Length: 257
Image (cartoon, rainbow, N blue to C red; front, side, top):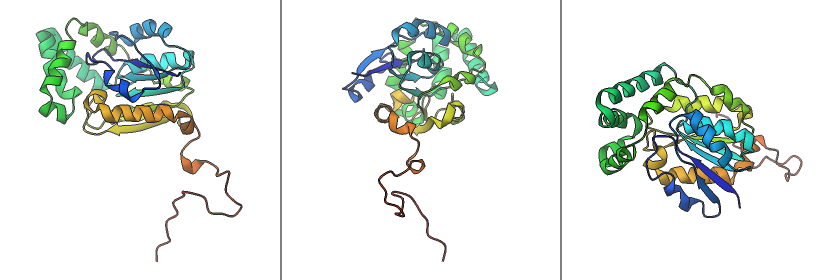
């Protein structure tokens, strides 16, 4: 039985990846505990990830996942809402969150963070879910999380070590780490092994805002990662075709009349 390891970001909702479990009935599922910084997470998780596992990581946990994946020979990697550098835009958001936290504690942090972390659907009708997320943050060291990211810098070079396919999934309404961060990840994954998709109606917390689509994307990628390594269909040679026959499933537009 193959193994999937879920790696949560430090601000992940308290339910964790429980909504994903029904999507993977034929896999052994492991979920790691969150840690405030990528460095601490990497140190704690390295010994817990078995050889040849599939990794599913959220937010800054992707940094630790990319460090661990080559060491354990991971078969595939799914990254939800990832970022591998803190540029000026993200730096400004983190500094604003730090100021809110230092001046008003957890309540002020939640008020400042929610519009950046959640999409319009939950911001409009998901007050109960947002309150549950805020409740789950009680007792967590948000100061350490903030300082860990403020000092992250640019670690995109670590993506060059990946030897397996990576799916990058970003909420279409992610304001905290918008789509360009996802594009950067796929650009740095070697040999076109990275694929980027969007999750509609979701913000930074896409796996929890639209869990049905998020888990279906992860399942489809994990089940077909070997096909993905062959490249898109139009790159492959049709082995069963007769000489001179038209390629199968190839779009050939008609010449204009």
